[in-house]
Length: 301
Ligand SMILES: [Zn+2]
Image (cartoon, rainbow, N blue to C red; front, side, top):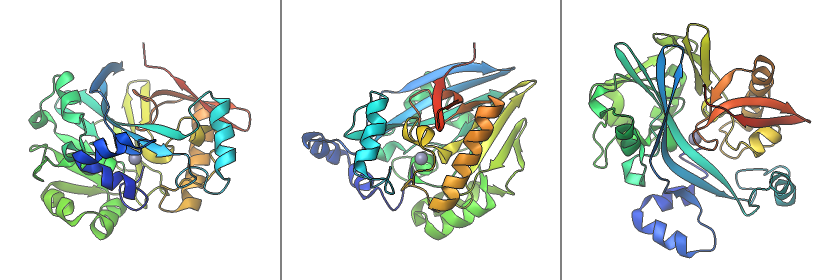
């Protein structure tokens, strides 16, 4: 999901009073409150938590999903999965990895100013903000970097180094919120796409959604999991029809190519993933289904 251009609605909804206004309209669109949540699981010897922040409600009006195929075709795809046809609901989640010497947070949600619940979810995982040592950013859209700062715009995780790929940091400085860029600048360490960014965590370049968009592969012994960032947004539309244009992608063509290649790879390798916008907690597998793919949610046992 994109924090900047498309979501004019999203930005409007960031003011708390806008929730009330939108709630009175027939369709609640944009960021919407979600209950806090911290779903813990293990990966090898690591302890992970999927942390819930908010929901994002996208109207089925071809503004984001299916701008190239049209509303009736999107409606049919939603009907086939017995999903509501007036909107596409996305979760907004982050991931936490605890290991000896490091507490690593992957993305930070929309932030408290937008009504994000990440800090409450973090507390539910018994982690305090000053215990977080590393923050890995998949990309610089508002629903991934908004939580880097508190309501008053100061750094939310005082001890953490903020890591994102060098092309993404360049993109954020050119196109992101100046206030946010200035607030985080002293804490940012940019890395070369593909670099190891924490013990057992490697960045995976997945450009298209944004220029420096990165996934993160987390390994412990033979166990591994890939945070795919915003390579796919809707578990129904993005997996069932990966070739359809996603309005959130900065480069639609590159975004599509990345999505198609990644999903083919994931279905073949059967690698477990975390997808920040799939139904919470967003952990599971991508499986081949007809011409596309389907979502098989599954937490490690
Ligand atoms: Zn997003």
